[in-house]
Image (cartoon, rainbow over all chains, first blue to last red; front, side, top):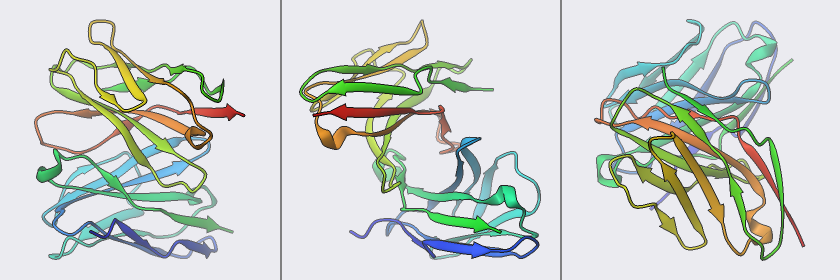
Length: 113
Length: 116
């Protein structure tokens, strides 16, 4: 079975731009969560989607948004990028069949200049 | 709110020796799960071991075992016969039970170096 895939793997943007990151979960997984990892703040939960519905959201400004499609693929969008948005963005998927163990993707490294 | 604390930013161990990484957590919930994740330089997060709070028996996965002290809210990871490939950042994580969310709350991590 293919693992969680994230695209793109690396991204460079400038302040003020917007960006969309994509996550394809393991086949059959309906839950997708997103995390931001930075040296200063560590790993922080962004949001979680289950069957196309956002069921939990972390403490991030409204510039951070996400969605999930009917095939469970998920996207997150960051608008009006700031330097502090530079981070590794990790996506994880899970299913009831795995006891909701979360499987992580390789991440997208976003650099904001 | 739940919190996870890892008080050892860095640890070092000799190859073939044993090392213990510490983690404490705070919660008022009775149903929860605890995890140890490994993040090597490739940045791919890998689940090392999980512990259900309702289980008194400590979880074990090959060379990895935990010491789960529920009353003390402590969840340490013991790595036996350390190998060079064990060098990585290790994160302790908490998840509420009940199935309402899969949100993980992470500690700040412990960077483990393995000396040959």
